[in-house]
Every structure is written in structure tokens, then in C-alpha cells.
Amino acid sequence: MTITRLRFAIFLLLICWLAACKVNHLAQIQPQGYRMEPQSAALPAADEAIEALIMPYKTQLDAEMNEVIGTAAHTLATGKPEGTLGNWMSDLFQEQISAYMGKTIDFAMMNSGGIRIPTLQQGQITRGKIYELMPFDNMLVVVYVDASVVQEFADKMAREGGSPVSRQLRFVIKNGKALNVTVNGQPLQTGRMYSIGTSDYIANGGSDHTFFVDKPRDEVGVLMRDAIIEYVKKQTAQGQQIQAEKDGRVQ
Amino acid sequence: MNRRHFIQTLGSGMALAGTGAFPLQALAAEPEMLQLTILHTNDVHSRIEPFPMDGSRYQGMGGAARRAAMIKRIREEQQHVLLLDAGDIFQGTPYFNVYGGELEMKLMTRMGYDAATLGNHDFDAGIEGLEKQLPNASFPLINCNYDFSNTILNGKVKPYQIFKKEQIKIGVLGVGIELEGLVPQALYKETRYLDPIANANKYADILRRDEKCDFVICLSHLGYQYRDSKISDIVLARNSRNIDLIIGGHTHTFLDEPAVETNLEGRQVLINQVGWAGIMLGRLDVYFERNRRGRCLSCQNLTVNTKRK
Image 1 (spheres, chains in turn cyan, blue):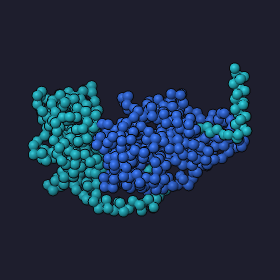
Image 2 (cartoon, rainbow over the protein chains, first blue to last red):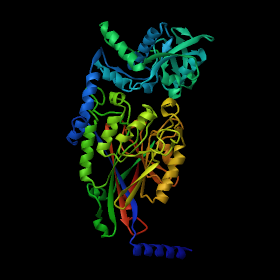
Image 3 (cartoon, chains in turn red, purple):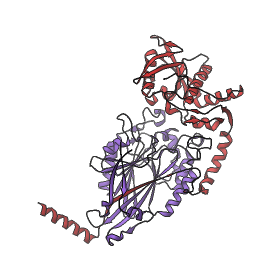
Image 4 (cartoon, rainbow over the protein chains, first blue to last red):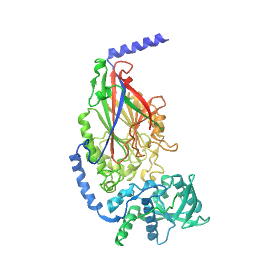
């Protein structure tokens, strides 16, 4: 048995030698990576041909995007269970949607993944910065759900350790569940309908918000990004700077 | 988590660096070594320019022009380079909102990308928006678990691509994440999501057995790892056959060094991912020994060290 195998192996080797066939063996993999630091001696200077390719696009874009639309009084940041950036965005959506719809909605929410930069830095806010914050062409909508769905939503938030929601909704996270859920200071009431402002992405079940699918809804008809830009401009016109705090809405 | 990495026990690793094919002195003229340099990015998200100098975490980092310069320098030093991207080329700066991904594709073409796979955000301008940018991409888009037959992308995305570097054949396949729940259906239309593991294995088998590839790379936009049982690169690696390397994306994970998992055949699979936004350019130097023998002589130098991180 062994001898037969050995003979076969020798035979194969011989064939290989005669045919001059070579085998490629994976010998080694050596990892390395380059961090694209701003001023690093280890990195070459920017490629000029690439910069030239970018330039006409950049010039046109900058003309539109470098418009300063407001000022952040301090740096706003994402965070869990709540963050100033998520609080600010959710609160402004609640306010803006209520204004657009001509009626006060109960609260507004968004998914953590919907905020695309970790901080809005203190200082001038450009139009382009809002595009970075909210690059998606998501539309604002209002979904109408009963108390059980609000609880279900709060539980999902609790499992994720918190996600952006406006100040009207408050609860405490315990063992991955939402306890003492209140809307405008009132405990959830069976039989009452709640109006939640969010994006069409979430209302269509995005990021596993399946409980919003097929619920009654109103289209606001405004892009989330445009609502943010309008809000910042409105604040600026009123001489206000952008600011937000953590108020323990989710803890 | 058990993270392991390769260590060069002999000096050969150092001696090999920076050279192309050459005979290994100590082993006479018979075995030759060939070096393949794999460069990779993932989740660049339309970051054409470096992050602005506004005091934010990644200020001044990234930027296509500097990445291009680095790639050019490496190409000057290395004979055999493969430049790959693991998806989410689009979405994240106004460049995408305004120009629809045109500049992203043109820049990748100019940098000489060899292949890219599709991320969920590459559907953000709709499947028509993606199709519209294909003429600006001279490199193939690779995916084997999206069925595009009832869409405008039918026949325009390949399940795999084979690259030949001297006598080394490299097979590259691609897998993508489930789009339902992540991307509005109005954007991905009739694209059907198929099992990524079954399809990765199917095409890896074709690449290894039928196409006789020496090295099989899977470009993945599944994500590195999840708390639940959701399919990730780790899950794929453990349930795979014939895949040597997974270049991942989606979770924006910065790996200090590639992770090593064991596949269904008891062989090692490397997984690498380099964060997002072009902050990092990944590089893996793969060395092949060519000889007429059934076994590898210098492969004994390859040892795996277990280290907890």
C-alpha cells in the first residue's frame, strides 16, 4: 500500500520533472498598512495629476458647499445612551416636522447609523457639513402607531444601548428593556395613537424597524437634509447659535 | 476573540521585501520566490479630499491624491501589484450628491484599481445611478451573490475575475450583504440576494479546481463581525473552502493586523479590513515559492503565533 503510493508519488514527480512543471506554494503573507496622516514624512506628496482631475469638480462644489449657514456654540457629538448631536437632530426634526405639518407631533427619532459624522465641531457650520452629516436623500415622514409599537420601538432602542430620539420620549434602560416609557411626561396609554417623525427609510422598515412597516403615515415632502439646513438658517437669522445638551431622556 | 498573526522566524521575510521574483540563495537555484503585493481599500464613501482641518478626529487624513501617490510609489517598487476595493465607494460627501459617483469612479480608474465589489451604499443613487457610472470605471465590479438578471445591471457585474502575474494565477470573487432592510427596495429594484457562503464556496471551488488559481481572494461587504449570528467575514471564513484571503468592508473596522480563522478544510484564512474613508491603505505582501516538488521548502518559515489582543 505505502510502497504503491510512494511509487505513484515518484512517478508523478518524474512526470513533473520531465514536463518541467512547477508548483506554486503559498509561502508567506506579510501584512503592512499605511495611515494617510496629514503631514507624514513617510508618505509621498499628493499626486498632481489626480489633484488636477479633482479641481474642476471641487471648484464648482465649493462654490455651493462652503456657504456658512450658522455657528455651533460647542462641539456636538454622537453617543450612547444619548449624545448631543443625536439629541439636537431629533429635536430639530420634531420641531421642523411640526411646523411643516401645522400640528405638533409627539416625538421624532432616527437611527444611529443615520448620523454619518461623529461630531459637529464648534464654530462655523457650512452647507457642505450638513451634507456630510446627512448625505442620504431621505424624506421626512410621520408614522402613526399605538402604545405597543412605541414600547416595541423603545425596547429596540434599549437593546442597542440607545439611539437618537427627541426630548419628548423618555425611558430608562434596564437589562436591555425600556422601562418607565413616557411621552411628554405621560406614561404610554393603550388606545392612544402616537405620531412619530422619522425618515422614509426607517418608516419602510430600514435598520430593522419592521414594526413601522404598513402603519398609517403622512409624507412631509421635505428632505431630512433640507430640514436641517433650514433649521440652522432660521437659528442664525434669530441670532442663535447651535447647541444641545444631554438631558437624561434615555438613561 | 482569538487573534493570531504571522511572524517571520527567519530573515527571509525581510530579505524578500522590496524585490520581485528571485531565486532563494540558500536553496540553490531550484525554487523561486515570487512576490505579489495586494493593496486594498474599503468604505471610501466618496472621500475625495482629506477630512477638513476642523479639529475633528480624522482631520487632514485620507484623500485620493495622496493615496494615488502612495500607490504609484509602491508600483515603482513592486513588479506585481493588485489594487482592490471592498465596496461602499459611494455616499458620504457632497461629491456623491452632486456628481452621482462620477469622480469616485474616474479616480479609481486613474489609480489603476483592478477590481471592486459592491457595497450597500453603492445602490444609493439607485441601480440606474450605479449603472450610469460603469462607463467611468475601467475595472470590473465583482459579486457572486446578487442575482441581477431582472435588472439593468444584468451581465454587467462578474462573479469573479482572474489575474495572472507571471506564473501565478489569482482568482478574485466578491460577496455582498443582504440589501433588504438596509437599502430601500426602490433603489435596488429586482436584485435578488443569494446565500453568500454557498456562492463564495461555489465560485472559490471553480477558481481553485477548474481555473487552477494559486491564490483565491474574496472581496466582501458582509462586515467583519456581529454580536448575533448574522453572516460576517468571520462566519464566512470558518465556513469556507478554497479561499485564502478575505478583504472586507461595511463595518468600518480598523484591524491592526489581519485576523486568521480556520476554514472547513482546516486551512487558514486571512481577513483584513482597513476602516473607512481612505484613512488607511491596506497592504499584504504574498510570497509564493515555485518549485518542481510536491512540497514547499520555505513554507516551514511560516509560523503562526497565538496572541491575545
